[in-house]
Image (cartoon, rainbow, N blue to C red; front, side, top):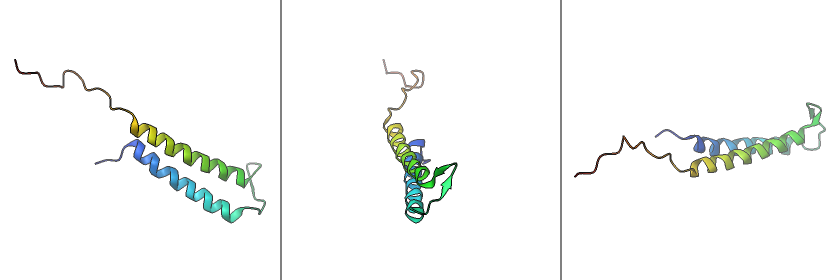
Amino acid sequence: MKPGLGSILRLVGPLIEVGCIVTLLQVRGLGYRALGLPIEYLLYAGIAVGVVLVLAGIIISRRPAPPGDRWDTPREAP
């Protein structure tokens, strides 16, 4: 069984979050900057992106399946 998009998003989100949290704990207070911003801001944004991915994966997984084509359903016996 192939994983769906919802499952993939629910798995990738926590990976991004953990990576950002570990990096944040290592560089906090050292004054590193990237793109003109303190690196902590970018890592907090990465954590937020991870949460959004998890929520999107949950929403996509809970979506109802599209209705089947009426030509694909078998006919009722007369």
